[in-house]
Amino acid sequence: MTDVLDAPAAVKPINHWISGAPYAGTSGRSGPVFNPATGRQSGAVDFATVEEVDRAVQAAKAAFPAWRALSIAKRAEILFAIRELVHERREEIAKHLTAEHGKVLSDAMGEVTRGLEVIEFCCGIPHLLKGGMTEQASTGVDVYSIRQPLGVVAGITPFNFPAMVPMWMWAPAIACGNTFVLKPSEKDPSASVYMAQLLKEAGLPDGVFNVVHGDKVAVDAILDHRDIAAVSFVGSTPIAKYVYETATANGKRCQALGGAKNHMIVLPDADIDMAADAAVSAAYGSAGERCMAVSLLVAVGDVADPLIDAIKARIPNVKVGNGMDASSEMGPLITREHRDKVASYLEDGGGDVLVDGRESCPDDGFFLAPSLIDGLEPGMRAYDDEIFGPVLGVTRVTTYDEAVRLVNENPYGNGTAIFTRDGGVARQFQFDVQAGMVGINVPIPVPVAYYSFGGWKASLFGDRHIYGPEGIDFFTRGKVVTSRWPDPATSTVDLGFPQTR
Ligand code: NAD
Picture 1 (cartoon, helix red, strand yellow):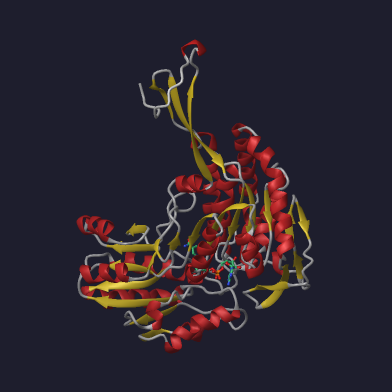
Picture 2 (tube, helix red, strand yellow; picture 1 turned 60 degrees about the horizontal axis):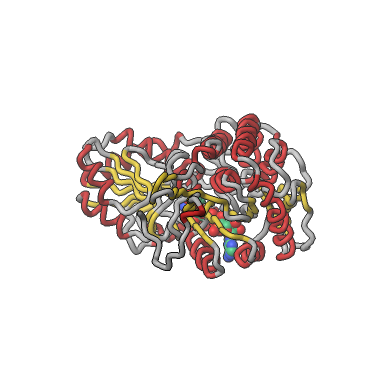
């Protein structure tokens, strides 16, 4: 095991970041930050007051006019510098993630890489903000469209991707000319502050990117703040709904991505070993704490028994341990409470527990080893709930139609996947299924950065997906200019409604 961020015995204070510098909170309220692999508290994060959130918003507001006025070429130059620095320090960022979230270092490196892809997409902002132009729309009249930033915008993010999800938000937001206030998860906040330092080092002007930590007080202060034009949220469905309803009632633009219950359908003609490899990787990677994790296998026809055997054969080989240990493949869960809640599904979640992860996990920390439950059906707790842990459920059905109905009747619609060798059925699935992101023989179909990410139904409140082209759209608003330069000598009064000539 490496020592890196585990070393300090003392609890480190984690401050806000306002106007390009750390800002020590004054509320007297803070939250504990743990190393989930040891179970020991490593930090105490400041919880912002309403006034402290306002301070960050005022810093962003003051920085907006100059940032917005900077040429797109210069903004792109800063984004390229950010890309270089984040790439150079990707391992340091990943170590922050492993230390506070618990995910293994290789997985944390993957998180940073997928976030970097969004920054790389945003380096193309000169091209992305190109408008349209029609010359001679009417005689002597030209019409063109431009997109302009909104002003101060905010991001509120979950614990499970402490670097990538903020990057999904701030990279397009600042590329478009907005200034940003981030409220990261209070459970693993250090990566955000480290990223803020990197952005400053890369040349981002002070105040363009700010971080306030905290709980509901900070979130509500953002949702109520009259100077914040838009809120991007990622987290659980009940909070996403609350954030969307409150932000939009307060006149803000909002996209709020929620939870998930991702079904992976396996058809009888699928390659069993490939499907089992995919299911184990997608269910237990990051200890199942991914909104795109596979949490339910829908086994069609006689595929269930051989598929379950293949998964059971693989589970003992998954190395569970401290994420800083290079041999570990799966780390702990985020908190003791969450670990215990996930474990409760093995007690009374329904179905037949085939592999019980409580029996084989490390003693220290918040660990639960991979678990498998057969015979789940709608109405059972382990089927209905987003468990968000390393518990894979299996539901048996007899036909493709039954399998698709299960996906479509589920309240969530984030990701889904089908495993088959039949291209025709796969294409029909893509046509039929009600989910925002679909994998065909791909278990975790997170779109590449130049498409957009988002679910359907209770997995997304709002009408724009995150990052990619829809991210650019979300953080800008359109303006259409109609212009003419006539000879004043031809000017007349005409009270009729303007028509093209
Ligand atoms: P969460 O909803 O508990 O927290 C998300 C954010 O909301 C945090 O910043 C938190 O401080 C804040 N928050 C929590 N309770 C609040 C309250 N009562 N009022 C106001 N703000 C509150 O989510 P989490 O546990 O951090 O993250 C896991 C969840 O996020 C899972 O449901 C997962 O599916 C979801 N998620 C979704 C996506 C997606 O793209 N759809 C991606 C990642 C995670």
